[in-house]
Structure formats: structure tokens, C-alpha cells
Length: 164
Image 1 (cartoon, rainbow, N blue to C red):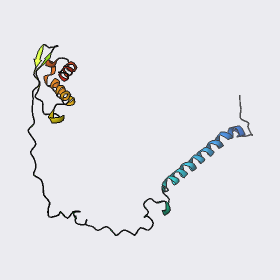
Image 2 (cartoon, rainbow, N blue to C red; image 1 turned 30 degrees about the vertical axis):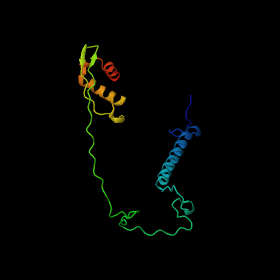
Image 3 (cartoon, rainbow, N blue to C red; image 1 turned 90 degrees about the horizontal axis):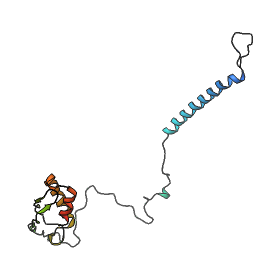
Image 4 (tube, rainbow, N blue to C red; image 1 turned 135 degrees about the horizontal axis):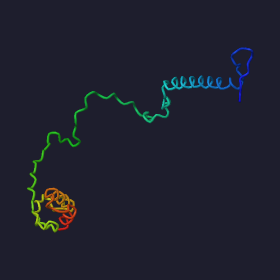
């Protein structure tokens, strides 16, 4: 057991062992304050990400290049390369041909035992307006949502509708 030494007074005398933690804590607090103050000072200084040396600038004009004239406020008037300024002919719009709608045959649903009619198809994205696989898949998925429970298993309905 450790007992403090007495020097004739009522208070115990500070020994080297006991004084050491106080000194260490004061030293660490001071160094922490200095470090925090230094961090604040250095963070306030501007950081330069580029050098001021113009030799390494990618925006520097090339050698033997004459200085560019200042840009005018208004753009110059357009001049046609072929001189067709007075001969502009706007073509007449051609109306799009009417879309062909065809109705595929009705579809038998084995789960419900019903025959459901297919919705009319809009001309597809295929050559000549033919319905592509993606058009058919979109139409069948839409029909499955329209018919709801009457279509039975939605996945089976979409699959049989696509493959008809």
C-alpha cells in the first residue's frame, strides 16, 4: 500500500510518481490546443490546385497564332454556302397513312374456361407496320391487366397470348 510522505505539514508532499500524471495531462492538453489552433489557421488558408505558370496551360494560344478579334455582341447574319438565300423551298407535309388495325382471334383461357377477345392491334413497329414480338408482348400484358381475374393466371395468359 502506498502512503504519501509527510513533510511536517498536514498536506502530503508531491512525489515524483504522483506529480507525473498531472504534468503529462497538462502537456497533452496544451499540445491539443496548439494542434487545433494550427488546424484552424491552416484550413483558412486558400488552397491552390493549379500553378501560376503559363507554360503548362492548355488554354494558351498556339505559337504563331494571331490574337483573336473580340467577339461581337450580335452574331453575324447567316450566309448560305450555296447562295440559295432567296430560293428556299419548304416541302409540303405529306399526311401519314392511316394506321391499320387488325383484331387477332379470341384467346381461350384454360384456367377459367372462357374465351376472351383480343384487343385491336395498332400497326406495329415492324416492316410494313407488322406487329413485332415486343408489340405483341406489350399488347398481351395490357390485355391481362384489362381482363384481370377473367384471364386466370396472368403469366400463363400473357405467355399463351404471345405464342398464338
